[in-house]
Length: 552
Image 1 (tube, one colour):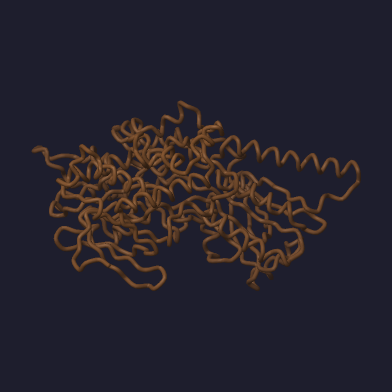
Image 2 (cartoon, helix red, strand yellow):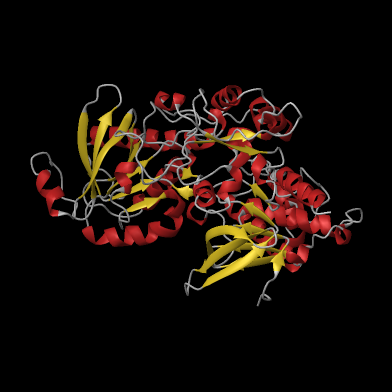
């Protein structure tokens, strides 16, 4: 139970890998022989993280069997910052008695399941060192508090009870909110539509609900990235072991591109994720330069698939053709347990209809030439070149369409803290800008230009409820690279951030003392690695060092 009026040194919003790395760096700083932690007025025992989940979780919806990480285990929570840290992946293996066996595997990439177990182990470790984590509470708002503090308002996910806590410093690690194509989101929530973030935890229930149909199932997977490919292969494996009558089950993979594209994980390309590269990107002379770098290296992360997964997918589809050829030659019936993957490239979603609604079922009578799918989804698809449209009914739809990472901005703009940074509810669009670009007065003081007109293209935070196009892409695109030219002449709000990930108040807000840090949502200023695991340890060190320096 918290004492009335208690003030934390730091509260973190969320307790995923980013804030877990922060917690680990704080513990190491506090316990280190040269840290002088007890003299700086910042205590590891006075730190709290608030997490919505009831226990530590990490992408539970994509913990699929035999899926591997796409980064080396050395890019863990601590190694790149402090190889001797007790929170490294090697320390975890040693503690769990599997170090030799892991070495014998001969691979630097653990399975996704093992990496989740490592993160869970690290979470327990920092809690044992005094870090407090409040699970089962969702942060609903923040506000300006007394005595130069930030008030955090959170709601118990079970009881609905509201708690209010105060802190001198705040670190926001919001993760991402599942993003659906606008045409699909209009039908949600829907029992036959799931986002890939919930796939592994929902697919059994989904398929069980479809099993009484006793006919071939047809499922759409929307997207062309790693998650879409993994979901498609997993569905193929599951459906191949269930009977679909005299026809195979079908999985349609729908995407805008012409084919699945391989991720570039070559050694030189991987240097884009190095901390030194983050320094270089942050200090580039203009936003256009940063955007050009993001565009050049987009194929390392966005809408791409690991080459090994592509090889597996191609092999599965080749086997399909082989079996079909054998069946035709021998005049036999196709194996009833088989499932078929269909690629539908160069395709976007034009509309989606709920077949359980009478108007949707009636309107399709003239075009439907297939078995009725009851409570399924009708997708109207459009070819990106010919604009030709076709409708196809699905028993279920899985959207592997990425995440929205702007919830933190809406929370900040809607609070009375936003004014200290030049933000308000109508602050749209907003540009996240390096603090090095803040113009100065002739006396050298920082000049408030957060609302100055801007002639360059701007970044507009995406709103899940606001479609940006009548014909949305089937895969997510970088908002920094795909905005309309109409925005070029609009005034913008500039939100400045330091290399240490700390937001900079406007000149007139010098009375605002709390420091607010962002984690995982500063790609526009810090580069492609920002939302990835690659730099967790180094980034956490920068944030904690900055906190320590400014709390002395």
